[in-house]
Image (cartoon, rainbow, N blue to C red):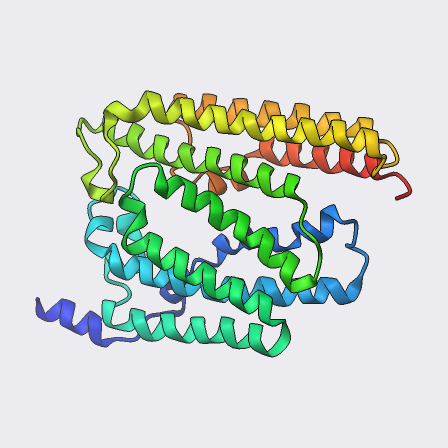
Length: 309
């Protein structure tokens, strides 16, 4: 190790480097904890909203601890990646020695807040999330298909956690929709990674230590599109069921959500096929104006469907 690198390792991380290490922009994924309240039409209950906020903060702290562990574990691979090489640990702005104290601190903050302000069921879910994400970092992300399914499970676990934190039942329809749509996003992530590797002329994505090969691109594409459309099918079946049970005042408006989701999934995969999709589909969605418009239309359709309920 050079003297300059030793000096960097001895210096505490700057506020900007620490912020990048914790990735607070990724906390948007944890807004899924509010999904049970939203679909149960309980968003006007201030006590439940507060519980949801506490769950969101707890989950976000634990998620940040996992991001730090991930950067520590993947530092060598990240340095070979065209964009991940700018991550704090890979770039040297944060030393590897500093990672574990930071990770443990945020893990304790998240779990401590959950124990103090939420219930035991949510704490169990939070610890399960930590164990699964850590297992993904060190082992499961190297297993073809298993990695994608686990990512879908982790997104769905966020929804389940929100239901547990607020004592709100979670619909099986919501869980099924979540598994399929997030599996599609996970496949899109793998597809975009393989697309980049193919463009670089490599045969295997060794830089990310994945088990996928460039020759898997067609299969990943098909599985991603199919799971995306299955999520729309689940949504359509739910709309038909709700039309029979009259859970909404005007359930016919929910068909607008189905159309929007079909458009969004189709557009996502067309962009992926063109190589225009960021390797983080969630980040792409947040920066994509069309996705925001689709989201607003879906909210409007759901609001019209709810009517006076």
